[in-house]
Every structure is written in C-alpha cells, then in structure tokens.
Length: 206
Image 1: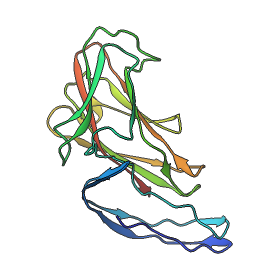
Image 2: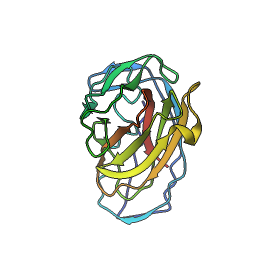
Image 3: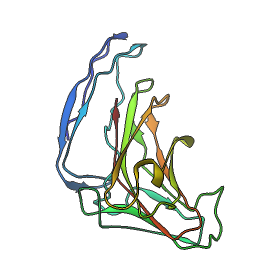
Image 4: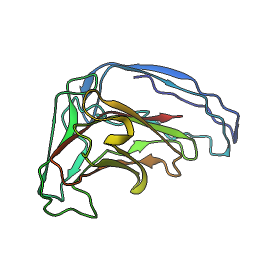
C-alpha cells in the first residue's frame, strides 16, 4: 500500500493531492485489505498547521472482511438478529452479513445489529469520502445507517438502489474535525425476514 506523505509549511495553501494506489491482498496483524486500485482526487485547503503531519491510513482496517472480523467490533442488541462473515462478497470472498428472523426481540433505538471499525487516522478539516457496497435480499429488508464518531450521517435502504442481484455502491462525503474517525454501520429491520450485507469499506480524501 502506498501512503501519501505531505510536507506542510506553516500555511498550507491550494495543495493538490492526486494519488493512485494499489493494495496487495494480505493479512497483516490488524490490517487486511484486498488488492484494489483507488484514485484520490484533488484536495484544496488553506490552514494554519504545525510542521508535523499525522500519519494517514487511507483505508479502513479489514474493510473487505477478508481477514474475518478483526478488528471490527460487533454489537447485537436484538436476539432476532445474527451475524456472520462469509461469501458472497462484492469482488472478494467475504462480506459482513446480518440475518434477521422476526419477530424482533430487544431492538436498541430501532437497531438490531451494528458493526464498528477500528479508528482510521485522518487529517482534520480535509474532506474525505467513505465508499462501501451494500446488498439487501428483499424490498422490505430495512436499512443500514452510517455514523462517523457516533454522529448519524447517512442511510441506505433496499429501495434506494434496488434489492437482490448484485451489490450496489454507496458514496458518503464527510469532513472530520479530529485526527481519527470511527465508522459505525447500524442495521435496522422491519417485520420481514431479511439478509443485509456490507463489503469493500474504504475512507480516503475526496
């Protein structure tokens, strides 16, 4: 994986970042990611900052679940929900999947399941983009919500992109104000037995 290193002076002005990187499939401790080519587009900003720059990850650890679940954390407040990591994935072997078998038994503010990423290091006040793929097995399969550092930001349901068939791409813009971001996906179901999946989670400058 190629990391982008920036040399900052006291004032950063009109800095343009264009990076194409390729990641080799590997499991390496708490970082696992499949081979993938991404392009980071232009970032222009003006800021007064120190001469040192925090390291940036440009990925969500194990964002394609090819190393199983680690280091993601799963919470299942609803006994009607169960989770597993396995096939099919979007372009790889695995995805994170939640199966809902009604009736609900213990939702937490409507949430049946959630999966939480490890912290991703970022540069504050620079626009970033989260991308991930979703799959819903039926029209009434509820929806998946996204939170950044516990702040609700985005929702996707089966009727937004369709259901069954293939995974569909989601793109979410977010500008962090801290040096780390934790991404949380929450699964909310209706009253129909359903299976929802996510895969290919990435987070990089927009």
